[in-house]
Length: 84
Image (cartoon, rainbow, N blue to C red; front, side, top):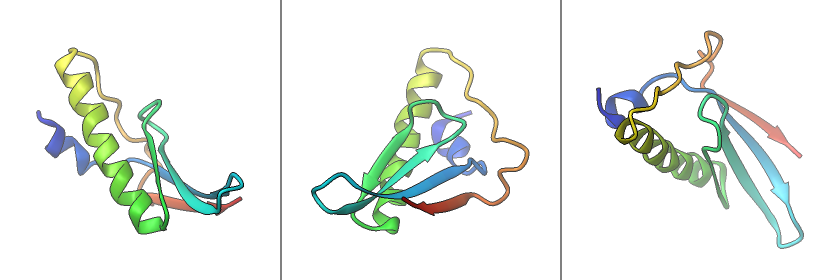
């Protein structure tokens, strides 16, 4: 299986709006892919960026012969957003 095929799995992406003093931005993490995260100025940018990060994470795992985690069973709702 390749990274592109695995990207279509229903992974749980958590979106948070943050402001670290330089203005608000959106931060996205993939709960099942430890350390897979990205950000963007808008929700859409953060989601696009985290999809690129997911591709890199999955590709690196496959190249190293590591197992790519399955999505959580309750990950049918692919996105959650939380303002912080």
